[in-house]
Length: 140
Image 1 (tube, one colour):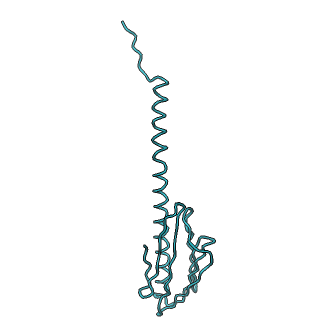
Image 2: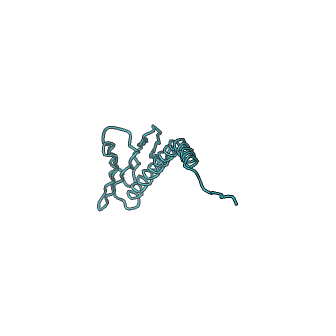
Image 3: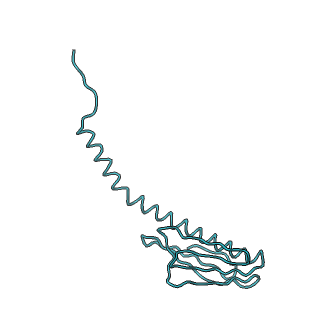
């Protein structure tokens, strides 16, 4: 009667682990690039929603709203009577610019036309523009 041994040798296991390591090393940059793209897309959606909420507050509550964009701290803020909101842009995404900018939204008046540029660590850009007629933010 023959003695049959079943199992995996150490060399076979090392070859499988090397193949798995090469697949992971090849796919990591693509996955990381995809995550950066998702972060930028999500941040631009958050900025557009934040601006839309500030514009709606001015129109519906008939209150003056001040919007502050601070690229150095990588955040935005909206202030009004009894209203204060901030938006921290997520890590890996930054607001383009050097100086703090302030905009006043007057109820019943024309909306200020301004744009916010966001960029990620890979250099991809998103441009959020507030339309001066409708007051709605548009992402491009």
